[in-house]
Image (cartoon, rainbow over all chains, first blue to last red):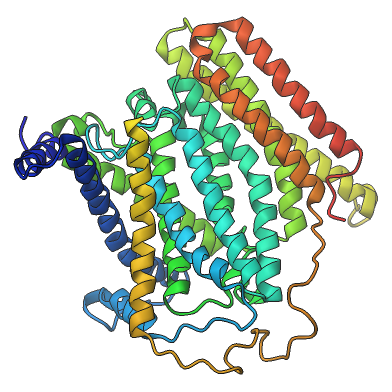
Length: 397
Length: 117
């Protein structure tokens, strides 16, 4: 047992010695150590969050064929610090008719809903906040707090744009939580546990190879939950100006902005944990916890990059289309996939591993193909109802 | 039990960080409010009437359907956790349960309630 193998335990033991040496009861010392550990993790996250601002701006610039921030410091790396100073010293106006208490709590809740998600993220086999055995449910519950903060912000601002934005966010949350919950059931079935670290430990084969469709549906639902394009109806710059956070300025707006970026990164991390093996990468996690952290952060960045890619490629879809897409396509698809996976899991329980993997993979592909075929034929029928049957035009006599 | 103490610590620290940031801004930022600055922002146009308007929630039925599904999926989690040990019978039972749920969705759909009205 050395610092290289288990840094958290070594540091905790050393601190416990120090604190009990001061005459502190062991229980209090343990809680204090826990507090310091949480503070360390969240401080690292906030520093990462600062650089996420830079990464996001740089990536969106590249997608739009621009350079992005490149003046302040090398590659514009100091830019986010300039942004923070500006946000801190900017006057913070509160609209006259606002509900002050709710208005001030909302940005804090927005940030908190993201930070508490990291309680269940296993960064390495030995480095994790809490190994909750109901991790999947905790993920959903914490996400609901984020939506709550948006509703609070929208309602308390006393602004029509903000109110409409909040209403739309409720519509998004109400629809996309169902496929998300259903897709969380699939790693749960494979691993036989809702705990995040058990899900990672059981992933000798990444679950994306067992259930690729589930990973895609989870990604779509996660993007909707984040309120990012193409599901950013709550903000909708071109119609609601800024939606739910229209009346916020200064650091309160900064909290919403930083919360959104960190939320996207966090969901990249959860995509990695649930479907891409978390901190596992060909036994690299056994070498050192530090390597395991590097692996999971790298995978989370890939997930985050995919979310950014979707955001800056697709257009915002209309809210009725969004609801129809969810309730008439994604929810039935998610439930049929769940039934197929449960059935295949039972039928192939005693099959050799290669048969299990290929059977799962092929059943997923079959479900996806069938869903797309049904959607295509239905839309063709709709189109023919409007345009009349497709006529073959004979050219040239 | 001790697990939940740490979850509580995450809640506390998760609140301290934004409170600290907003508090720093509150100390450093200038405070010169005036009535014009505090008016409701509507792209420069004066607000007509009350801004806490009554707003039609067209997705009311969706929300009701969502409530049913949300509660029912929570029942599915224990089923999913123990699925590996329960065998084919439990799987078929679970599928029947899901089919009952989907029947509710189909009923709502057939009634034309899944339309934006």
